[in-house]
Length: 415
Image (cartoon, rainbow, N blue to C red; front, side, top):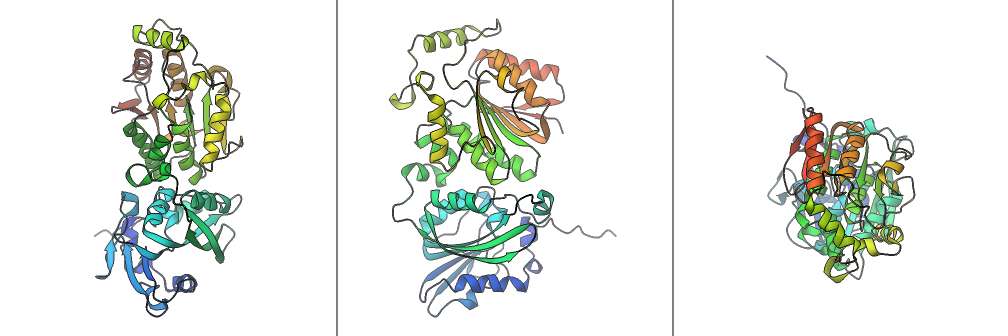
C-alpha cells in the first residue's frame, strides 16, 4: 500500500484542504477588520476554511466569502486564475494571502475595481537578492516589489490610503494595504474587452496590429510558461508600436523576469532572400512607397519620425519604465544587436518580423537559449511566405522542436 502524495503547496488541491489554514492568520484578518466601518458590506476573497475575517467585523456588517472550496453556504466557489470572480457588488473587497498565487494580478485588481469601493489586500514583497526557489516552494507564482505593486494598483484604479507591515523575514516583507477606488474610473482602455486584460487594453489604445485572438493567445502562452516555472527572461523580435511588448513585459515583471524588445524602430528593412515570395515583395513595395495604412487612420508605425521615443512613452503610460535593466528596448538590426546584448536564457520569445532572413535568424538565436518548458510564438507564419518557409526549415533541421498550429503558431521542444 502506497502513501498518498501531499498536494503541492499553493495548488488548488492544497487550498481545498481545511488543514492548510493556520490559526495565526487571524491576526492579519484582525488588522484588515480595523479598516472596515460598521454596516459595510464585505466580500472576503480567499476567505479560507476558518472564515477568520467574519467574526472580527464591526457591528452591522454583511459578510460574503469566496474561495476555491465552498466551505459554507455563504461562500461562493471561485477560481480567480480560471477567470472567475465573485458575483455582486460590495463596499469592501478583501484579499489576504491571495495575490501571490495569481497568474495575472492586474486582471483581478481591475475586476475588483468594478465590484467595490475599497480594496484591502496583503502581499509578500520579495527582498533584494531573494531566493526564487523559496517563493516557488511556498507556491507563489509572482514576485512584485513594493514600488511595482503600487504602480499596478494605481493603473488599475486604486489609490493606497494606508499600509502596515504584518510580518517580515529575511526573504520577504508582508504588507497589508487599504486602497480606495480612484474617483475617475480607469480609462476606457483598461476596461475594454473581456474583464480588462492587458491584451485588450493595448488593443483599445491602437498600440498593436495583432488581432485580439492573437494577443490573447500570446498572453495566455506566456502566463502558462511562467506558472509552470520555466527559467529565463522574455524577448520580442519585432516590437512595432509596442502593444504586444507591453503585454509581455507586464507579465514578465510580475514574475521577476526581464523583458527585451528588439527592433529597428523605423522602416522595416527590405526582404532580401529568394525564399520571400511575391506576397512579401508586394507588401514591401507598398510600405516603401508610403502607401501603408496605420491602425484606424493613424500614421503607419514605420513612418513615424521617432518611433523609439513613441514606444518608450507607451510603455511608460502602462507603468513600465524602459530602464535598460528590467525592460530593454534595443534599437538596430537583429544580427547587430542580439550578439552584443545582455540576452541570456529565455523562457519565452515572440517572433514578429515578417520576412525569411530575420525569422530564420531569430529562431536560431532563440533555440540555443530556450529553457526546458519554454516556447516561441511566431506571429506571421500564416501571413507571409518567407516566415513560413523559415519556420518549416527550422523545424526540419531541428527535429527536437514541434509546432502547435493556431492564429499564431507555437514552437516548443518535444517533451
